[in-house]
Length: 545
Ligand code: AMP
Ligand code: DBH
Image: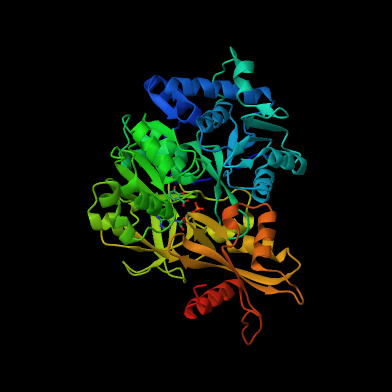
């Protein structure tokens, strides 16, 4: 199976090239170029490594030789579940150098997500760390190989006798440097994952041309220069710290990438002080934690110039405290792995920075704001935002059903977000149409969790909704009707869901048992209406248990 190309119609593709958005450079060619331009400058730092651009490129070549030596062929997909370490970059650029296609999986993902994404992508290999954050990935690797026989190779960053050792690639490959495998810059470079609002996560095919454009332009909007230092505080596999402007934006600007093992204030403040970090990106709950911790820290965080906040709505009151408390400029980011990214600009007036989620990267991002009947809303009124443009996908990978729902006939992506366009063109995110939970920037599909709950024989029916939460923004709440004579507790059900092998952030924060779900006179109501009704009833009751 090969991955179909992302298809933009010829006229749009021609326009994107003509305007210089798509420059015809692949990731492998990009790193080769950066290794010449910024040769001895520091590219990436973590607790154990400090690599220059030239060294990163050399390591990527060695990794490429190692991957090729396994028998992987250009175009093959390789699932990558690597935490924030320097090796994230040598693995990803090694794959690119060998013409392979990374499939990004978060370190928090567990077997349910991993097996699905590996099978769906048709991947032939899996790269993971031995351990991270107290979790041992080797049993997960064994489960994956047993369940998905197409995964012929497991490569481990760290210690693992039974699998290929990523560090061992360097010994095998010495003296076997190879030129990058040539790829079409219009071809799919990697598969990113979507939080998704229905069912399991979907795969997002991004091309070299479109993705490089998105972070090259982001680097400029975010003011990155070779003197900048970008701290990767969120998991590197996330689209936000990867490209908005992220470590990719930092690299293309010749800046230094600093890998944080976790986003906790004390971990990151120490790294900011040590590496003179100038910019980083956080989800709103982390920004709140950092603001709470900053007044008491002993670390000097005065090098920080820009804080990007996105992934979920950052409330204006909190946004207004960023400069006074952290001493840096807030830059809001409203983005999505499917493409479209909006930024407030560094020199915008305070009210734009604190009250809006910015404006699109590209003059050729075509934005529609439509009512539920598909008609344009009056200027300034809230509506559903649709987008088409030079770095927004035209289809998910192998999802005919979702593609029919998520894209219009003329190629606009239905984001599911509700926004308002303010005078001046900035967008304000007002909410969303879909049924997912945005828990601290992690998107959770209600349907996916309902399915897990329904797998328990004690559960007759379940509906999962988002409830407001002061810290997380939203938390997940499962309303559950138990089967006759079932006797399980909320704690039992949480343990059951956790035992299904899903990312911990998806385990319902709260479980409320109810006797029945409301039905209409005609019988059953839609899941969507049911979730909305349960949420309304709950909030109206003012129950805050
Ligand atoms: P995903 O499609 O999983 O990459 O998640 C992208 C979604 O995150 C967007 O469609 C929005 O719903 C949400 N999002 C991202 N940034 C923001 C933001 N700054 N404010 C509000 N919602 C956001
Ligand atoms: O939430 C996201 O997916 C997101 C947020 C900010 C994103 O993909 C991005 C910036 O690029």
